[in-house]
Image (cartoon, rainbow over all chains, first blue to last red; front, side, top):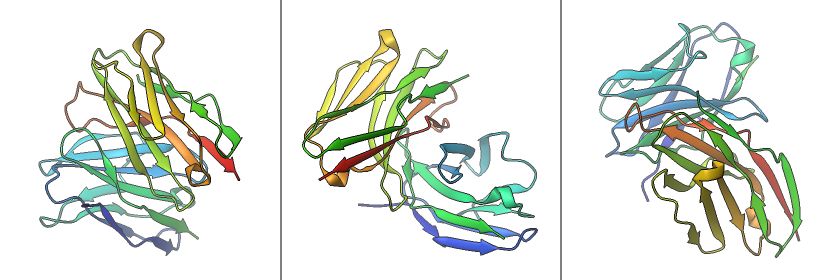
Length: 111
Length: 117
């Protein structure tokens, strides 16, 4: 069964550094998303992406965040200057229509 | 604004017991989708079910069943004859159809289910 793939599974970064989280969505899906989950808390929406542009973003998705689909397969989330509070699990999801399928997540630890 | 409330935070049952996980939602949209996801200890999010707001038929899939009641804005999830492998955090989620197919999911806080042998 096709699945969403995220790399790396765990990323450790110094505060203030840039980090790029990578995702390969399911190949025939057209809609892409990033969510985050701070440890022990609920999953929060960050951004949705369709047709090479952002469809919707949350208040969390400020100027430090950006998304890109650099080629036909990858979908990336960049955090420009990481803060301690960016430590979380980041989930990529994709959908053909409505049902969003999630990757296994990238655990981001900011030191 | 959309909201999902999972009032139960932790539930512990003994294997083979039935357990119901509650979900109450709020939305001003007339059409919307409801979801349940499972997050096992390994951390991934596993899609379980999607329900369109027009379809109030209950659904059964093996030991899992879902009861959607629009009148009470609830979408409850029952596991029959629970097993240790059912131990996980279960999230209920809501999306609007207003902005189209790629509407964001609004999640509840999740319910931690522990099934003891």
